[in-house]
Amino acid sequence: MAEEGKSCKRGYEDPWPPVRGDYLVGNPNAGVVAVTLASPLFPQGAAICGQCKTENLGIEKIVANVISNCNIRFLILCGVESKGHLPGNTILALHRNGIDEQGRIIGSRGAIPFIQNLPPEAIQRFQKQVELIDCIGLEDVVQIEEQISRYNRLAKPYPEQPFQVIKRKAASRQIVAGKGDLSFGAGVAMDTAAWLVIEEAL
Amino acid sequence: MFRFSREQSIVNVAGVKFGGQPGMLPSVLCGTIFYHGHRIVEDEERGIFDGSAAEKLIARQEELSEETGCPSVLHLYARSPLAFEKYLDFVERVWSGPFIIDSADAATRSSAALLATELGYADRAIYNSISLATDEKEVQALRDSEIDSAIILAYNPSEPGVDGSLAILETGGKVLEKGLLPMAWETGLVNLLIDPAVVPLGSGAGSALRFSVAAKARLGLPVGSGIHNAISSWPWLSQKEMAARKCCDAAAAAMQLLSAADFLLYGPIESADIIFPAAAMADILIAEAVRDLDIAPGVKHPLHRLV
Image 1 (cartoon, rainbow over the protein chains, first blue to last red):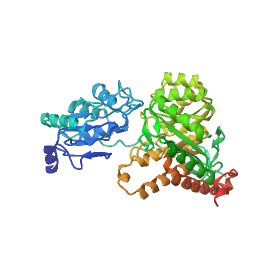
Image 2 (tube, rainbow over the protein chains, first blue to last red; image 1 turned 135 degrees about the vertical axis):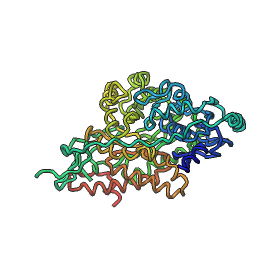
Image 3 (cartoon, rainbow over the protein chains, first blue to last red; image 1 turned 30 degrees about the horizontal axis):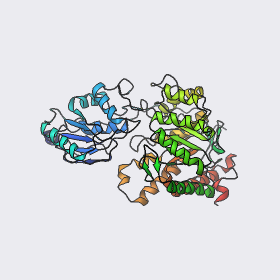
Image 4 (spheres, chains in turn yellow, brown; image 1 turned 180 degrees about the vertical axis):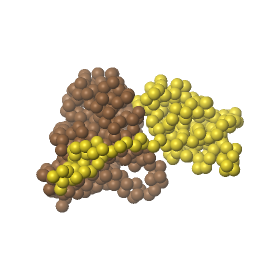
């Protein structure tokens, strides 16, 4: 419990960020993250900084890493959009509209804008915890760093526990052997629907 | 290895054959050129590139194809319609085989399909891809074109896993009114190649392997993937030496082929030197494994060329 109280005080739990990705971690006590979309930029001063080129799995990682750190209150979207995928537009849409029952991000113009590994509560937390700063198209690192400094000064920790996204387990199902549709020879077959190797009746 | 009880169709695009029972045909290997960040491309929007370097890369893939017996396809990636026009103009002078039309931008894909038709290359073109993202505008462009070969991307983010991927192909699952296969047939596409849509390691990349077997068993269509993407997006591996990265790339290719794939979208065409030997090796092992299952490899198979 002492550990829990301590981590709450800091605003995040180790190891942070919890989801691996292609990003640079700065000071976890900073109040800003910088998402540079398709531009390989590395501005200083953010809690975490990295690209996001896809409108689905990439965004999930950002959300999971942001809401697990209460210090983060601003997300700066900068750099150029990833053509076709439009992750910047999709992050804005996710924050503004959320997702529908199938996980589709409402209002995104990206190609396949879906959230598949986060519970709805994680999206709601993302919407409440952070404010988005739309600087899409900005590639000047100095100007991005000015924005980071400005919003770092404004940031106050979110007054709740860090939200840890637990990976959803695949639903288990009962395996029942059907008819073998793939033969290994020697009387051994597989039912590919059940993914079960069976001995064929002689 | 194994044999499917369902008949396995063989798709022929400009003389290159995809599909059949495992061990029957050599794997078709598709290397990507002009991809995002390709060092030979100076301007991705305007399609300005180093022609001499591009020609060497295409020639190297063709040379390895001749040597191993694994047919090759040129995977053309373009960022804009103008860039695709420039690439196609170049490619028709140095490459006579099938090519894949690819772009993240739907308008570029549609424009490329119509341009390939106008220039008389529709029978050599494979459209990449029909997916959840395909809208009516893109479908209409395909109807207006003469392209009849396409990759069908079985990506179903609302139901991750093998069952969801099959559902998006057959019925549309929970997110489409119609399955991607009926949609493709109605669009006039005849030669269909199934791609499980490989997601990053840790997000379910492995299910592409099981899906490949399940899709062939259920549909009898050729299957292949860009499993390279799972390897190239693995942050842990990206910190390792080049030898380790190449080793994993080749290993993933061989694993996908062992899981019944008929073709590979193997990523950057520069990887031809590691992928062709790995794929040829996998083809030989598979062909030998099914020898007593009444499957005979064709005359150009690596089994007859390299051992």
